[in-house]
Image (cartoon, rainbow, N blue to C red):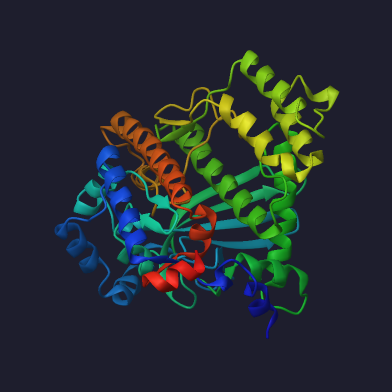
Length: 432
C-alpha cells in the first residue's frame, strides 16, 4: 500500500457510508423539505438554468484554445490543488516560488464569471440562492453542479480558465510588495487530498515536496504573524495542509479587497465583522476562566483575542468546545457591506472581503465581476443585504437539520464525513 493510500485508510471515509432505513430516509427528506420551505431555500434548479449551464460547458477545449491569447499563459507554472478527499470540485490552486529578495505566491481561482455573468439566467439564480447550503449528507448548490464538475474545476492535466491573484511578498515581514490580479490559463499538475499533502511534506523524494514545504513555511509564518497581530484563532491544532490553504486564501482575499479599496477606489462586497462590547468580551473571558483546568494568562486580558488564543493553546482538549462556544456567543454576526468601514474584528483586518470561492458564495462571484469590470453592479447594497440574509438562513437550516439528525439517533458528523446509504429495514436495524 502506498503512503497516500495508507493515509486514507482508517479515516471516516474509509468506514463506508452510514446506513439508514428507507423509512428514516423519508423522514429526513420531509424534514429538509419543511426547512427549505420555511427558510425559502431553493432545492431544484429551473430547467432554463440547467440548460444554459449545460450549453456553457460544451466545446470547452476549443473555447480555451481560442481564448489563450487574451490571458496570461501560466500553463508551465507548477500548480496544484489541495482539498478534502470527498471534494466534488477544485476551485482554487496554488503556485509558489522563492526568489532572491521575495516570495511569489499565486492563488488561482476558477474563472466562474467567464461562464456566469449578469446577462445569464445562472447569475439570477445565484443571486436568488446567494450561497451553497451544506447539510450533513446533502448539499444545495448555488450554481448548477455541472459547472463545478467541469469547466470550473481545476482538475489535473487539463487547461482551465482562472482568475489569478499574484502576490509578491517581502521575505522579512511577508507584506505585499506588489499585487497583480488577472485572467489566466493554468494547468494543474496534481490534485492532492489534505492527507496526501501532509505526506508530501514529510517525504523529500515525493513529487511537489519542495513546493509544499516552501508554501507551508510561508503559511506558517503568516499564521503566527496573524496571531501576533491579534487575529482570533479558534482552532489551534489545525494540521499543516489546512494551514497552507487557510492562510493562502486569507492572503489572496485580503490582497483583492486591498487592491479594490486603495488602488482602484471602487466599492466591493466587503466582509465586515463588528466587535463585541467590552462588557461582552469580559463576560466571555470570565466564563472561560471558570472552566475546570483552564486559565486565561493574566497579561492578555487587555486584548481579548490574544487572551483567547493563548488560553486555547494551553487548555485541555476536553474544554476546547466550551471555550469556542463562550466566544461565539458574544460575537456579533459578520455581514456583507459595500463599505469596509469597521473592518473584520475576528481576523483583525482593516479591510477584508471574499474572492476565493465564487462557486459557492455570491460575494466572491460579485467581487470577481467587479475586479474584471472595474465597475460595480447598480444594486450592490441590495446584493450585500441579500447575501447576508441568505447566509443567516443557511446557518439556521444547518443548525436545525443537525439537531433533527441527533433526535432520530444519527451522528451529524458521521453523516457529514461518510455520507448516507439507504438499505432495507432489516439491514438498517443491525447498523443503527
